[in-house]
Length: 104
Image (tube, rainbow, N blue to C red; front, side, top):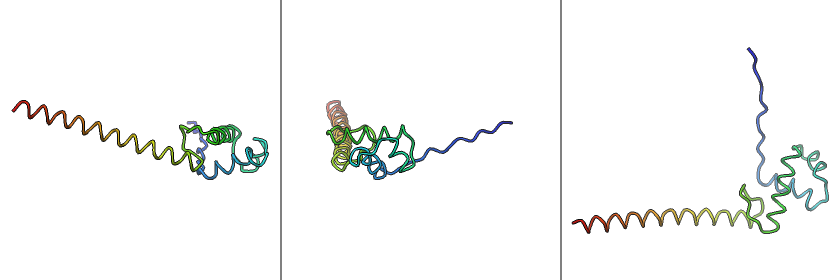
C-alpha cells in the first residue's frame, strides 16, 4: 500500500496579503524578496500584488478585497444582490396572489 501525504494549503488573512503585497508596491521589494521576507510562494505573492495593484486602480476584485474601499464595494454589491433576490420573490408572490384572486 502506498500512502501519499499532501501538503495542507495555507490560508492567509486579508490583512497579511495586503501587507505582503505592499512590500512590493510601496516598499520597492521584488516579488521574490517579498516572498522570502514573509515566507510565501512566488505565485501567491504575484497574485496578491496584481490584485492590490488593480484595487488601487479602482478595479473591484472577484476574490476577497484587500483595500477598505473595495471591501465596502463588495459588501454593498452583496447587499444589492440580496435586495434584488428579495424583490424577485415579492414579485412572484404578488403575481401568484393576483392570479389566485382572479380565479375566485
